[in-house]
Length: 252
Length: 252
Image (cartoon, rainbow over all chains, first blue to last red; front, top):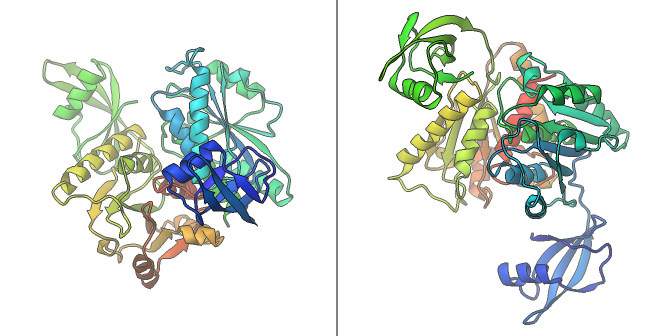
């Protein structure tokens, strides 16, 4: 079923479709009177709607019922990636959204070969926010992940994060393989106790993490975790982490 | 360190580089006398090599030592994906190789919107095999995953697989969340007992799996597993599975 996010916390029983939804539902999806779709409100409530009227530039829909669904990862995971080459940011956001990330931060790592020209940052972040919105609709999320940019690793605000993790290739090479497992065990307890947790997971660029960045994370209580014995591309590691967290917290 | 696969099961202490390795190491990577690289033999043994001589069209390298490394997923996972749109196959192979898949099978699902013209199958499979080779080198695998094509789901040979799993969206919708967990628990026991297991994991196309395909898998002892509550794109689900298996079998 087609799903749309609407920037309202309430809806009336009969609703005139906002322009963007009107355009996609009627013009792109060719919906007609009697077609069903879902609306996700800012409150994360999901409304099953049916189209009742279609005019040239306007369409109306009625509320059929509220739908119960809990599809959000039980822990809030922020994926912080150093800038990488090409379109990696776009699909880290697309796949990461499908896999349940709550937020994405892109930062200029000391070894990032790519830099975001300050004039272009807003445009890039807006573009990534659009990718997140589309992926959230497609994967039937009830939250749209936020996307931010930080000029450096230490520009990321740390206090709000209960857990701080960095995927560190050197740890993996040294055979570190228990830290992620420990983290998920502790998260599982939190979830079972219905406590919410904010997790920050940092991923370096192709060039790796600088000694200064390593020192900074050491000083700030980051857990250095290996993600298995194989070397993953910068854009693959965040998907591994989110999949592992989903497996550990949502299955079983 | 740059790593190359070589189609030999033995090497001499001094080796003339094969043309493809010569080209990449000397022309592309600009290696010179004294440069180090690794060679992975067909036996999966890893040799640390040093270049000893560079001529116009030939270079020699000497064996410095054998390197110990076990980076292969302890279970053999075959990812069987129905044909999907665009370049999804290429990056299922690239990312799946980074995540430890042993083999990839692409098959024409009943609901696949894409078909592979029989004249083009060989070319497509060769292309994907090249992607697998490059990803295996990049992720420091010691095995290059095989890539195959099957004209339909029931053309896949089943007897060699100890475990057969299908990622089934309907199962996920119905809240099925224990089957993958059970599978990994059983696999973990096999691994601890140093027993090898062959796993087949089937993923449908965007259009989903047909009733006939579902019936066929039911008849052939497939486990229908949900991969969490979010809807994943056809190309994301295999990465979720491989990441979850790595987490369950390689970490902790």
